Length: 325
Ligand code: ADP
Ligand code: MG
Image 1 (cartoon, protein in one colour):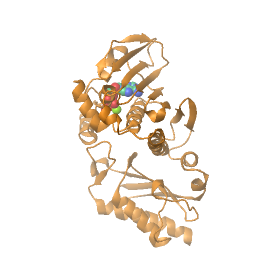
Image 2 (spheres, rainbow, N blue to C red):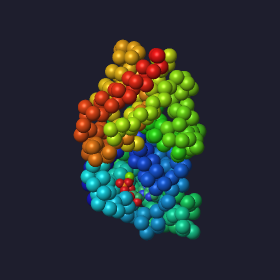
Image 3 (cartoon, rainbow, N blue to C red):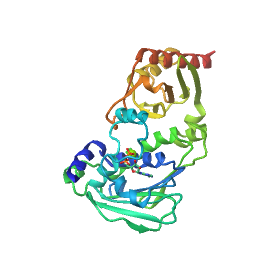
């Protein structure tokens, strides 16, 4: 089974940032309001994610690190979600098969906590452990037992950069959650968790004062679609392809046709050839979006791609044109 998990890890775990993503998403699924992330050496030496979510009962700890054991499938709808999101119940066993792994937790209603260690896939015994309400997952020495994978990890800085970039995109979508990051024992970043959904506060925290100051608010709904967020006004000069954030139903994605619609609207009203900076949230009926089966790709396919493209184009064209009037 360890071997199967290691093979699955080849899909799920590309680098420290993918581990952080899986662990933080689990924390959010568990209802965490605050997530602390401690890193050492770009996450290669250590990734520790602590949350204040609902926690895991001691006897369920082994289940959490078993293949395809998920507590998140309760109905047929969820089963359909699994078909689209794929890879349910694979993250923890995969990660635990390629690291020195500890899971410690205490349920909100429990008096005591417990912990479980997994070393390169070998699952230990459940042991009592003092722990505040919530869960801590510790991942040490990523790929220590898979030298061929370890070899592909990049410099500390590069790996840290990938982690920070992913956290930034999460922070934009979840301003209700407090996120704290430390690196090599020093506080590295803190996103306060008191914002409204995609508030300007969080915009300020994530993309900086200049962007926040020059961002034009967008908000439009129609034909079952809704687009909201910000697009930078042209006085904002730092715009580059790395400040283009698109979320479909709350999930960070890349989509060529939407990116094209944004760029086209920007070019038609304002500047040709310039990269617009934006943070845009598109909401639509989930049944009209195919989420790519591979969880790491962040790609989507719209049933009615043309409709989505034109909606985004027209919405932004109108919003930008208004600033010129
Ligand atoms: P999935 O998230 O797809 O269910 P994972 O392998 O990521 O699969 O996690 C397995 C299970 O472990 C989850 O279904 C959940 O029950 C439990 N779990 C993992 N992380 C946490 C956490 N931070 N808080 C509470 N439960 C967790
Ligand atoms: Mg998960």
